[in-house]
Image (cartoon, rainbow, N blue to C red):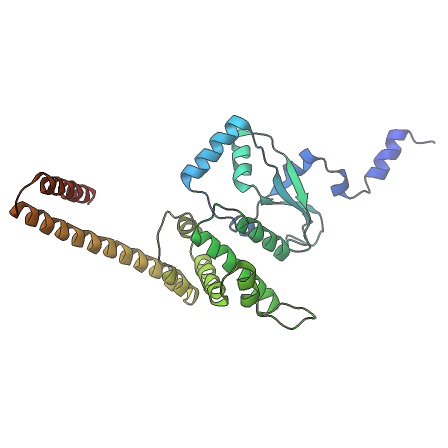
Length: 283
């Protein structure tokens, strides 16, 4: 019996790879977020995220999200080699779109490995202009650790062996020593819990870089203690600076009041008194 056209087509298309049949909407429904890739992206400050959300709600998602079209085997999910779609860029836009059920466009990219995808993401983030010094150091450090781990500290090539820190230093216009310190900074941050790490990278929490670099060489049990000690040190330092400033202002006010009072000296007394009041009110 001759098969009808639709039955014949169903048989043929059922053997085609899923990726060839996936429409854009189908791909969107399968997008996954990997924590290890999402964490490569420096976090937005609360006001920055709020502003982005307002812009998207008003104008829509203008820039497409970047998605990595790969397989479950490549990303170590399983050995089934099924199609997988991993979000590479646009995590904040994706989150806002999901929360408010907004539409967006996507760009598909292909990488041969998870490490290649990470390198792309790090380079892409470093190409942006709104990164803080800490965020830049973290991303450079991640790339150093990534290449150092994969290549054993050197690039595999038919050309003479080049140290990764030297090569990256030349690429970013800094010394190899800076790149190695960036590596310690990144390694130290990665030992902290996600909340602490995000607070430091967003600038919400101020910790000396030397303290973070020390964490890289410590064990996990010591990491939180080092951060707590660093916090205490910062607070103690701020308190000491504040007390010294109060004493200096008090002395200056007394000296001005003991001298000849003129319009200029009275204005200076008033200025220093207001400064002293501001410090005392903030305590």
